[in-house]
Length: 173
Length: 170
Image (cartoon, rainbow over all chains, first blue to last red; front, side, top):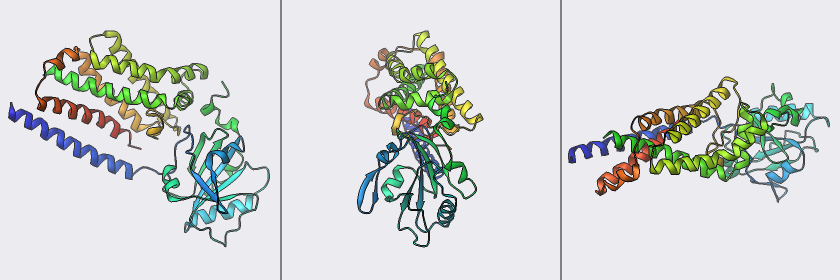
């Protein structure tokens, strides 16, 4: 009886260690390109000229908006931002840039696009570990699309409408 | 022995359902959005399903903590797990990127392989529970020693944890 109990304890201990190791490994391998569509974006604080704003309030301003999260020292972000500056016109959906770290002064962003700074804690809450990442948000702060933004796919982010996400909102039914 | 296995697996299912139901109750809108996005049912029905699901999960979990002798309960559990598996398989096939909301806002995973594996694990757990239904309260009354109780608690946590870890697979 004691031996069988010991055996069960051994199995349980090995199982627990194995589960913990697997959980750590799987977490490390997560894609890290942001919270998935269908979730509400966390109301993280973002700053602009020493003034604190909140992400959900920013989303509320328009019925759909494109949030581009870029980081200091990321050459892909610089390329995407330069392409954005080149393509920018007033037919695009409202764009907000969240910048992690100090913005490279060489990158010129049109003055119509507000740039906010975001801290590491907020980046973690958005589950981002690669840059640049984009989110399309509706006015309820629900994520309609998330992905890594590239120069090649940038155009597909800039002219979206709420109707493009009817499968998520059920609006067409 | 078979009854203890049935108890461990039933309690692992019940804990998973209880956690899933309670966490979804904090985010009913999200659960209903996911149900709509899956697109198996019409949007209005999906919304209703999304709102009702957390309450159904909690009720099934509470009954399962007491007994698994009801064939209706076992049928409802199987139906629930099979529907989860189908929904996740559909999302995988359609390559849709959608939040699962399986555990509300507390676990921000997406639908896909991980959630499908979790559903399949729950179906595998269901088989011995179905094969050896029992009144778990009566069974627990017969267990008195601390060692056995500790083994049951840790065993249930490990079994429930296996499913949760499967969810982390991308």
